[in-house]
Length: 264
Image 1: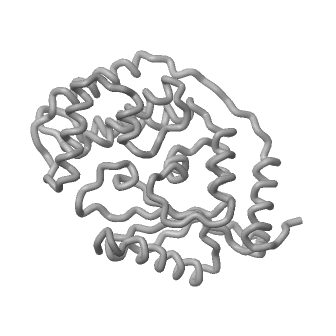
Image 2 (image 1 turned 180 degrees about the vertical axis):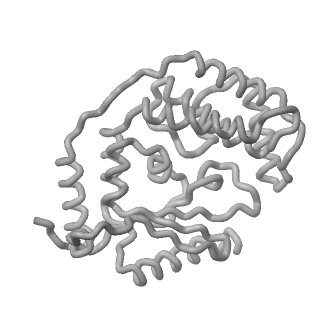
């Protein structure tokens, strides 16, 4: 499957998912390495979508699954979350959902739901929650892939991105952009580390195999320094105490807009 025909194929697949599951998909985007801006030439298309079901589905007394996961086919890795799940995650400030909503690659956006969700995200945004998320991600990937003199070279990105995300938050820039390149440019990094990151990214985009190999001193030193700094930094605590009434109203309005139905 080529870049030229991928979007029609994705839209066709989403249409099939809508019909077979009796749902309305109101947003679909790319996530993962393609959305972050450092895909390999053979990377899957990680398509993520948000959907809403008919009123009756939500009125059941049974607990039902709020995730749809479609078997991978033709490099398409597709899954989606129900609107109620998305709203609960917004209430908790869920970084992956924020990245979906900020993806630079949008395949589908219908109704006014998504634009309203983006506004809602700003109200519930917790820098503290995001800092802990990205710090955990950076530590975990560093320990698993970047120990010793021979490392998993392509995994540098999976430590760099959360570290740069933390710097973005630390500087008070707000919600972290999904695009890695926006992070690099916006943070105005030291010339040497910026050059090293750009060279590594170019190697990956050109299809070079970035498996196990010698560590890159400039990037390794930068990562070690940042992780050490954060180990001795106190992450400020903050809390957002908002009632669910606003989210309930939002959900009810979405039902009215998408299905032309009202939940009493």
